[in-house]
Length: 401
Image (cartoon, rainbow, N blue to C red; front, top):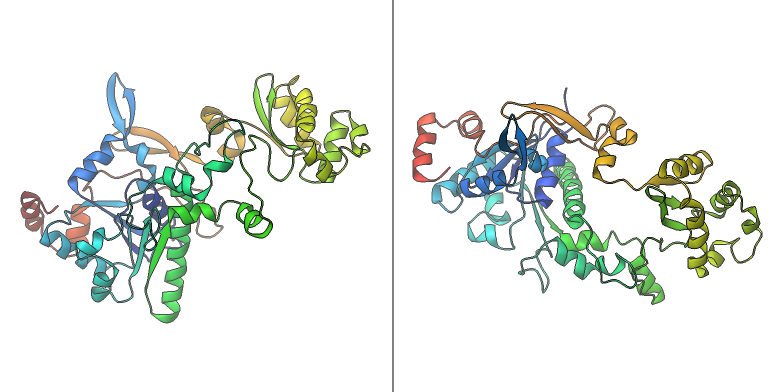
């Protein structure tokens, strides 16, 4: 099956989360992504596989690096002159180079944007860093937690009486990865029209600033500084997370006054729709705790399934708060094929995260799991660049690959 990006080659220096996720999206859409890593980095990546026992033997399954699926993997030591030379040869045959090292790292190796566009003038060169390529924080090393802290994201996460709380996963890495993939496709589209390549500069911090709903504007326009509200929505007091007899449910009972009226009818409290204290959204917002008590009083007597079924069929948005096991088993997640099972030549059947890219003509696909470090050295150095197997053997001995 032809895919949307099957004519694109990406030379990927991505590591950890942000850039590997970006290039995973490109690979899901068919791009030939060549993952470049040193032997040490490759061993470290493999050590992070998921532990399991199979046939009484413990093994580490590389499903932990699902972000490296669909990629070709080569080893290359960029601190050697030959490694730099080979990388430049690969860049000549690539459309995109991606990296998420600290600012200035690749420039010091002679592999910065200005260096590579000398060998491929129309190259698209994408970088993801914590704080971007310029500004007072640019030179600092940084990770998702710092981006969450500086962006204000932590300040609005958690309960009012508790400390600021980080998101449960490295959320800025995924936001930045998605924005970078979009930027790369946009830059390729521009190049197709003009013949010009360009530099892409993505920051974890920036990705969270744009994901704060309108909380930034609430301050810049109205001078309002919102902080943690727990499980109650900033937009209204009748949307939140409420207890049931067997867990919790998320309910948006106040998405609009019409939804609020439906909710009140369902719980047998149509009187609330005529009470000026609760009839309008602004009034309910001023009585957040009272509204929460009304909703909780109804949900806590029922199971998750009953609450969700009753509200959903009545036109009120509601969903169970799933743990990870429940999420994997959720019928909607299964219907969307968000977990797929693949046969691995070493590990047998492995179930891994599916692709969210659902296009009618060129859908994303999970073709293979994360490759072993250097698994495709011969395919790339011999098949793509035209070197011999003897060259590979010599470079292995010299520590180049």
